[in-house]
Amino acid sequence: MRLYAWMAVLLLTMSGSTLAQDYIRTKDGRRRAVVIENISESQVSYRDYYAPDGPLYTLPIEDIDQIDFSKMSAGPVYDPETAVVDARAVSNHSFSWSPFLGLEYSYEGAVSDHWTLIGRVGITPTGMYAWSGEESTHIEFLHFPAVTFEPRWYFSLEDRARDGKRTTGNSANFLSLRNSLLFTVDGPVIRMIPMFGIRRTAGRSFFHEFTVGPTAYFGPDGTAGASIHVNYRLGWYF
Image 1 (tube, helix red, strand yellow):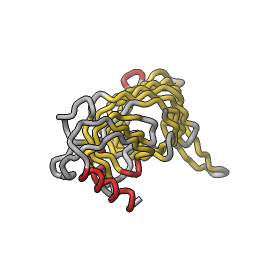
Image 2 (image 1 turned 60 degrees about the vertical axis):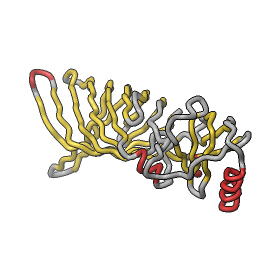
Image 3 (image 1 turned 45 degrees about the vertical axis):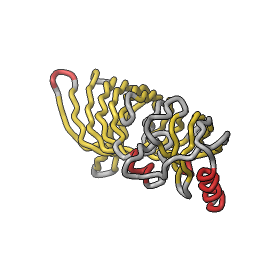
């Protein structure tokens, strides 16, 4: 890989200034039409072929599956202070599983480079309760059907890309507000959770998330309550 990277840099230096269409195929299956400007040991910098005067983007080498070169054109050396990192939030469908019988389908739609909106339906775990009597100890896990709406802000996408870390499939840290309507045996309950989360992806389709935050409940007949949310999810996205 080291030899390949420096040979590519040499070719870039020797090539002419004619605009040429190259293609980058990333490991998540996306194919970009680009003009490659520079290749280092850790990343590739390029411009959008259809907006050659636009910003300079970068991709970590580890996220690239294949590069199809046409006639490479010379360009400026990558400058981390001025380059725009190609680490934008992406839309996806997913199925996920949480401990204690949580199973949900989600659609996450990207609305900007860092913001997404998530709609989710399924069986949602809501808590664990334990108590002990004179003769036994009882543990109960609660889970209910639910509909969830969640705006999410991925705030570490660009930092991870600049460090050469994986950002595929929104692999980054985030802040979000999870709003759920739970259908319990006592009636509908609204649950709101401002969360800090860590999402990481693996391979082409798998992800896991850890989230934590305070929870507020609003139930039937004006009842209300609060608790602490801690959750871990495993899933498959596509």
